[in-house]
Length: 359
Ligand code: SF4
Image (tube, rainbow, N blue to C red; front, side, top):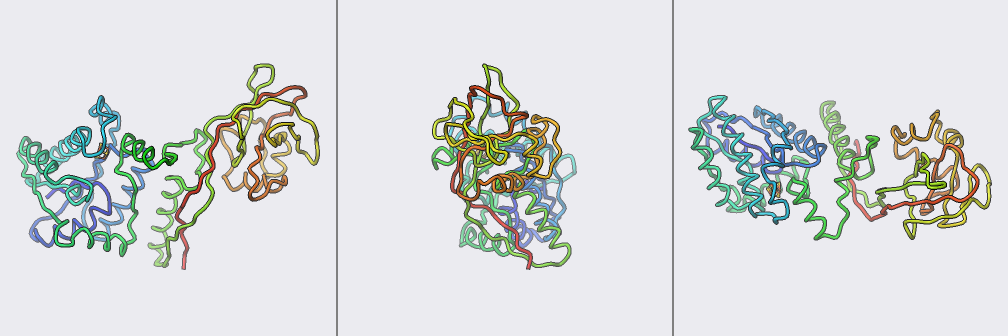
């Protein structure tokens, strides 16, 4: 039986129950979820499904990540809430490709771990699954493992197996709506052009879950604990002189009361140029290189290939801006004389992240 898999929390318990109910069926997992956004979240969920299937001894096939096809399919339905028409199209598409895969590999039956997700309607899934599977000559198997305390056992099993628990369904539209309702920044959608791993980001979590796999392979025990911290995201920033934008690098935790200001340098001390507005400090690239232990020749090189986030925190501290200091700090090739215009749109916010503690 081909089992379409959406995530490890749903599949881990579901596969075990399926095995009990269909002991003579060979189960083949099929991870086909191009709805998941961004791609790093897709990789994170896949990584955990691979781990879960390896634990259970279930073969797993990865489907294509055809996000463009998925987005064209749901075009016009972007604004609809979860459980609406967009979700029906989303299920249809995932079931269609899964049914084609089942037929391709000669499986006569298929099902989906979406059936066990507490937020999905079984009726809606069964209707779509049966119709689509029959078009490919495949039987859609509807099972309900939520009843009789199933959902609770699924949660316990997820905890016991230390599975990755996502907190949104998957697509960019559902995520955006959820974050708006929660009045939370959708920081999952920040993907810096420089490829830097930001604190509390999906990329950071992906690294953590890869590291835990290495620990498991070496037989080393660990804990994943949570940490509350002040997070930061820079949305947009620039420095202009005489209407010309200068290459500039804005260090993390640079926050302005108003997003725009203009003024000039009033003091130079210890390699820092003190601006007369918004407690802004400027520094030359040369000074940054000294403090960071780097050798950038131009500020735009630094912008596109910055050192790790923690290096910038150390630079701020070395320059006298320690913990709790949210003054903007900006690196320029040279700090020019005369008037400068500065724009910074950034957010600091309370956040929680996971930390891996080897034991
Ligand atoms: S909310 Fe979930 S089920 Fe609905 S369209 Fe988005 S990813 Fe698919």
